[in-house]
Amino acid sequence: MVDLIPSSDSVMQILKRTGAFRVGHFVYPTGKHSPHYFQMPLAFRYYDTAKVLAVALSRKFRLERDVSSQLPKVSIISPSSGGIPVAFGVRDALSAEQIYWAEQESGRRMFRQYVNQGDMNPCIIVDDIIRSGHAIEETVALVKELGAEVIGCGAIVRFTSAPDHLGEFPIKSLVEFDAHFYADGDSCVDCKENASVEHVRF
Ligand SMILES: [Zn+2]
Image 1 (cartoon, rainbow, N blue to C red):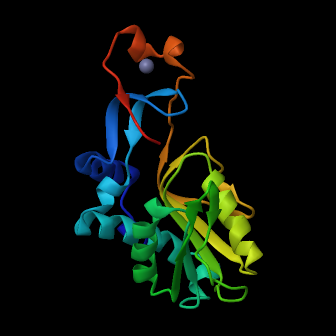
Image 2: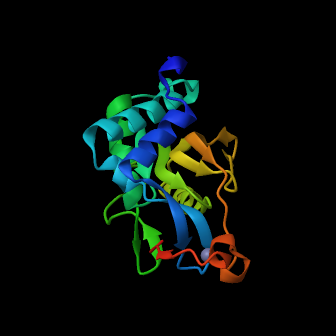
């Protein structure tokens, strides 16, 4: 079953082909500059690539006894809208019973109203990309408030600067990406070469 998980290189090829991974000269809202940018929903707009990526991630969870022994009574949780197609794909591949997603409302991450204490099965948190790990940490806190247990966590891409464990669980990913950022334009190599800039929203 492990052989059916595509290599990091072949996942990166999918991300490049769909425009989800872009190379250039990008400026983030924080003012940081970077030679690369991920816009993951571009990979999830196509049925075929969405399916390949979500099924691959789901296989990493199925290999975990903690997860496989509890299926189908598992909830797949997305920390944000970007993770929703990942969560649906993983839920489908694992035949897991439930799905929930959090959203940002007035600057706070929260689940929709009327999700109650005790409603949630043991949880796997999945996202499209883990850049800092903050979204995952906030989602873990939300899940725990509802009395649910976290049994796994993963994303299609994880920046190597983000945590690789969630408590005792290793965070699963298909690509471990060594992201490079310059603090500002003064330290940016592409700025020194007057390369044209693309401003990205987040
Ligand atoms: Zn720059």
